Image (cartoon, rainbow, N blue to C red; front, side):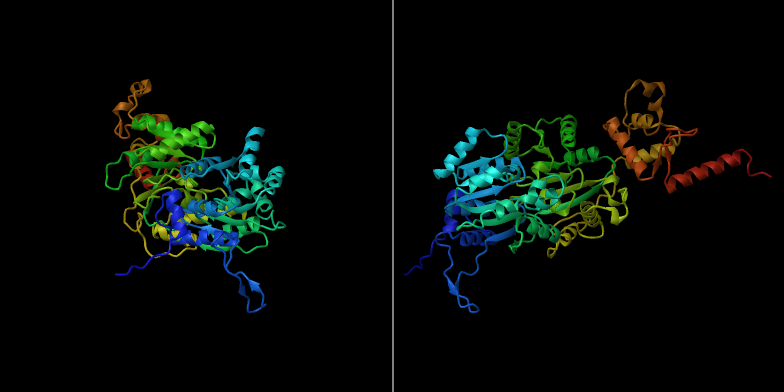
Length: 549
């Protein structure tokens, strides 16, 4: 009996030995091979061939510059970690956030690779030790951010060493942030093109999980000026994530409802909640701790001290029932594989950002859910600038994203993929296709019934006290506890009820006059409310003899 011997695949061997990974996805293998070939790694160099046009001996199919778009959970970090093991020179990875540097450092250390960190605030001794370790060959990985690496003295120092590979991670931020609040990103070509006169030039690879054509064009202008990088793009669809949109007049109460529901489609833990602001993340976390009576709820944002960030990250990585409320600082590159639910308290500003953030769910490929909470002020028609000519590019892209994604007549997944210019085959789960659109808005009926019943009689505070079944002194002084509707929103805070009423006011369903006889007294403003008032007036006129000649 004869056996056929197989040739050992070096990439698979390294993936298993260093990263405990048995299998490389096709896209990973393609990207890694391109990097190694372009960098001239031993065993991956293409043999020279005769160019039939020029007659010269040339090396074909090398791709020194790549833009790689792989969906979250597809293992893009491995695409630059694995080549570093085989490359003789330095690999420099530029991250947009310090939290991503810390996360990547942790993963490299787990793989037995010593990373060097280059960031602001380091002492002279720390910098000298880093360069000494690089010179001795102890460090082959430098993790940094644009503000640090683009300083003139840093760029000059790098030229003393052989740089094999430059990586720009989360490259969509180059456009989104470089043109707004981080202009240093616009200078990235100083790094990516700063070695051109040297004999050995580094390979440059830009990674992201999401990028539309507009973003890609801007990235090429900034990172690869005058060059034509190879584009490797996988479909950004994540079949294991189901998408849902919930319209609400009280995001806090809707969030509590989601987290405490016992229905079959309830949110599974661990849960990651996104808030746009730092203060919002903190307030939501404190509110949930109080309302749910749980200690395993924390917040995370860029304003935390480094030690506190590390502590919270480590907790969340190991938590199976935890709830983390975070800003977008936790939206990119943080690799917790078993997040089952991602909830957005506000819509993301772009489709790329939403796919990036919702993509934190289900990185282990198991079924997960992404839920977006939407209120009146989130919808484009509520924006003050309705003239498209006066809107910024970011505002136009937000309008395009939200208008498409909130459309209850089209599959949510199809809307996302269409905006990304990606192919859509079928829906693997969304509330539109599953016929599970949530039409009931919690609290709405209870508030409207009360205002209808006691039209122009209750102030905002009195209505809130009544609905929330409060026990303040004025509840008994004004006998609010006798009103029909008292306690129909038991458990709601006064602030939550007031916010919900204001939302209904923005929806033009309720009016709170600021002058006149009924100043500050709630009244109905909808067609239904107007009809009710008309009938009431007709009745009064009839009783007062207005209909008699």
